[in-house]
Image 1 (cartoon, rainbow, N blue to C red):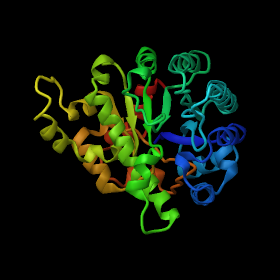
Image 2: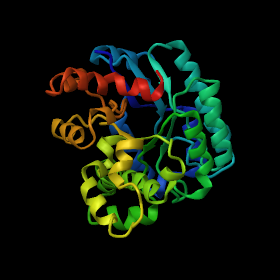
Image 3: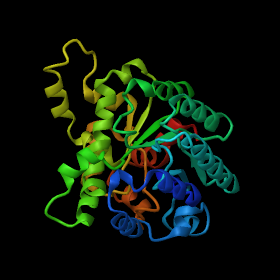
Length: 332
């Protein structure tokens, strides 16, 4: 069974160092704690920075045929400085060059400079038209702003025009959220994980998608397609509640929140290989709304193939999730 995974990352060391120089540690969190956190979740620099070597060996071992790769930690996308435009371009050019060495194994998502939405839109068009990328990934907010803010409309319009998705990826919450919500009478390390991969950034990424729905952005851009990781960042398990409650205050709207999920949003597991979650999302949204992901190199699974083949889903559903849906969505 052909397997294509879409939330797979690399890091550009030179660019990431420059982002840290300009911006400091993300969200003002303790640098030493973040360094320790990074080493726990990314203990293989070869796999993180190269699209061959350890990465290809892992893909071959677990049955992944194609990875769709995007920049991970240290991305210049949310850098609030003019230099972010050049740094994003540098990331995209480097990713394209590495993909060209293994064109049958990799595709790319563009890194976009949110500091300059017009430049970001142009960069997306360049990445798709000149570099052969298959969409973009946005990680978290920019200076506390979500993509529903009107300043980012050129990016949404560009994604709609090229007919390729934006992956709404988690990012660390804004400090004004992170400090009161996730730090308390526990160590800073626990606070970093609580605000990040344990819960905080998943809640924020789910809120990000809900804001795009409530703001009317997906109505204004009815052809816009979104990807939401980690089984829909909590919200895919909350659709009935969202429909019932927002119906009380959104009179006259033609679509419920769940309708947007079924029409403009696809979800991925991001390496959360839990059969109960898989079957819940299949029941709620259908297998045709799921594309596959491992979250490499931050998550490495040895059962990438077996998770699907042992799922009890029909052969048609397994193939749709493994490759069929994403091949159609990304035109691979």
